[in-house]
Length: 317
Image (cartoon, rainbow, N blue to C red):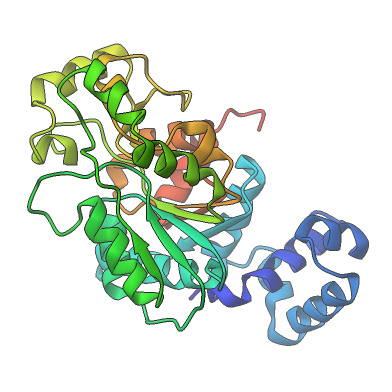
């Protein structure tokens, strides 16, 4: 059992007030809401039993885990999918939770950036239809020629369809054959304009990828397994919007990254709401790198991954 995404602010208000001991005005400032709203949420928390949740009952352990991760990594919102016995299937639960959270963050008038991958496409596939207005959904990185349904243009257009939004695809390859060609393509007016426009997004949705022979860039033919292994030796730890990052979450200085057509990291980090969804347990190190690089303000993950994240924190934290 866990708290619905729409009710999370009630839990957060209770957590800050009862667990951290903040005054109501301090809670209001932290959550960017009015003091009257804080009072309303605290009353609702008492009436519904969330006060008990905020003081760490086992029944709602996943929600307490979420608050602890917010505290530890300075995130604005965390949602943990509770692992309820052997029937728990992250491939089903995480996309459903991710879709619900995403819809709670999406609003009319927004510009939304979408990356790619199986997780992102699965979120789009289970997402309810929303009748939003004046929303534009844009692709954050170049495209792949692979026949997978979860390539960047497919993810972008499917989410645009679910939001009743306008979809803008990125008409350039993700990876070019050489650095000179990539550099020249980035200077083409239409590509330059698309890349520059990423910083204007209000919300972004992506996951973090593995650096392995199972990576999408290998499956689509953009890289070989040997090339990926060489990047791992150079320090590649994860993949953000098609680009390799090191353990600190910084762009890896490598030939591959210089051949990629994707949003620069300064633009990604300037997006106010950066929602990251992780379902695979194998992604612990990539997720830690992504969090170190400040690529997420909002995070959806499994209970097991949340527990491992906290267990890996330095003892002084």
